[in-house]
Length: 313
Ligand code: NAD
Ligand code: AKB
Image 1 (cartoon, helix red, strand yellow):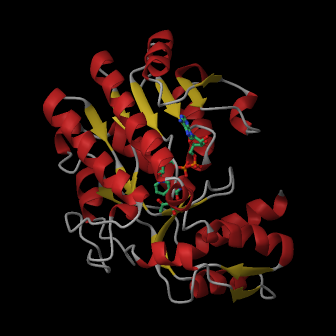
Image 2 (cartoon, rainbow, N blue to C red; image 1 turned 90 degrees about the vertical axis):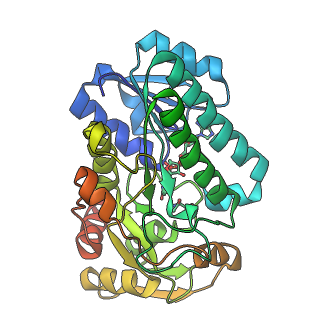
Image 3 (cartoon, rainbow, N blue to C red; image 1 turned 180 degrees about the horizontal axis):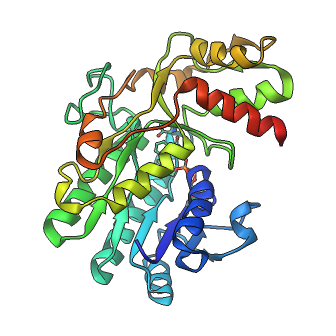
């Protein structure tokens, strides 16, 4: 990666990714973009462009203007928001990806697009979900993720476009707030712990989902995009995970650092149904073998860092 364009750069991942890329690749080599401006640390320095991924000409113009060689495509709607407007989700997540891939084909670019644990469904093996397995998701978000994985494979096989991607679990971070997913409870709980020392979980006790701290999620993008292409077998859909927990376990982890923290439940059946259709824990051995995936944070080290960082702020 030498000249990088990030789409959806003011979102949960993009905010921390852009800051890290500017440090590692040079501020002049990273172009952040999003469909509109919103308050963000990303806008304090460096390049920023308004870019709607549903407009292919806008993508092509920016690619040519900055001589881009890699697009990290983060523009999307997430699971809970998407379920409320499936047509809009399809337009952004699928037509947007199609546009990015077409511009990549014409300009010889590499492309990173994240998939998700949402690419699995209720009849996928739930525990230690294999890399290659049944994928029959029941959300429009999940359907778009499976189709996106296949579309990226297609562009690699048919046109030789260097497409790569991971299936992210729920991501926990303290930069930008999450954008409307099912796993967002695992971020909100830390903010509420600092503000009120209590939290009401909309996800039910016993619902385990894979999770990851944002520094590891960003390492994954850089490591995968810099990996030796000839070693990649599962280019566009590597299972990766760092931890798996249910609301009780994250509560207990917070209580290790904040004994007075309390949690109760008010389950939201809409998001609970989505969570129930996703795996408990992924098998990420293909990512470990093919490009050295090895996350640094577990639940307790993440909890300590989240509470320290949010507490200071
Ligand atoms: P987010 O919702 O926080 O950010 C998405 C960004 O896309 C927003 O800033 C939004 O303004 C922008 N956007 C929306 N429509 C756009 C358009 N037409 N053109 C350009 N930008 C547009 O999402 P995120 O959490 O940063 O997720 C980024 C990617 O990672 C998505 O593909 C998501 O599915 C995937 N992912 C995220 C998680 C997670 O837990 N955050 C987990 C798995 C996969
Ligand atoms: C969501 O909950 O929609 C995302 C995801 C796991 O893809 N965090």
